[in-house]
Image (cartoon, rainbow, N blue to C red; front, side):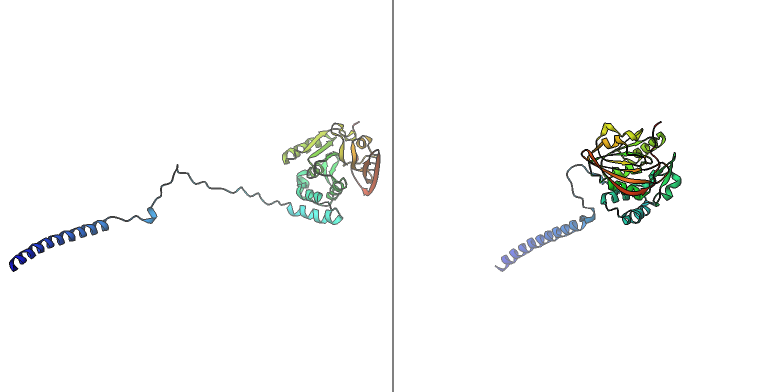
Length: 277
C-alpha cells in the first residue's frame, strides 16, 4: 500500500513538476512578450478623421492706414471756429469734421487749409472761410434725400460738405479749369452723389428743378429770378448780394407759395458772380 501510494505520489509528483515547468515557461514567455512590445507614445498617437485633410488658413488683418496729420487741425477748426460761433446743427458739424478740406486747396496752401480765413484757388477765386461754409450749410436746413443746387463750384469743398447731408447734390461752375479740377477731385475722393457741370449758374439747372435748397457762393448784385423759380415751395436759398469788389449782405430766402421771405444774416465778402458775356 505504501509502495503503491508512493508510486502514485511519485507519478503525481512527476506530473506536477512537468506542469510547473510548463507554467513557469508560459509565464516567462508572457512576461518577455509584454516587455518587448512597445506601448504607444501619447505624443505619436493619431486619430483618424473623416474626409480629406484641410490645410490651415491664416487670417491676416487689413493694413492699418497711416495717421491723418490733419485730424487735429480739422477737429480744432470745428470746435473753435464753428461750434463756438453758434453753429449747432450736428449733421453740419459732423460733415465739417469729416470732409478733408486740405484735399480741395492747392498744394502750396494745404498747411493753411484749416485756418480761419479764405484761400486762393486760382483764376481769381477762393475757397470760403470754414465758418461761412458751415453757416450757409446750416441756414438751408438740408435734410437727407432732399435736392440741393450750388452756384459756383469753385474748389468743390462746399459741394463735398453738402454731399454729407444728402445724396442729391448739383453744382455749376462757370470757369472751365475749375470745373474740370473739381470734377477730378470728386472722382478721386469718391463723391459719386455730386453731379457737376460747367456753365453760367445765374440760370440755375432747370433740368433737375425744383430744389429744396440752393446755395450761391459768389455775389450777384441782385437775386437771380431763375433761381427763385427753381426753388421748391418751402425751400430755402442762401445768397450774398451786393456790389462787386465790396462788402455784401448774406441773405436767407424762403419760398412760401408765391411769396419769398427774406432774412439778412449780416455782412460778408465774396467774389463777384461771374457771368457769360
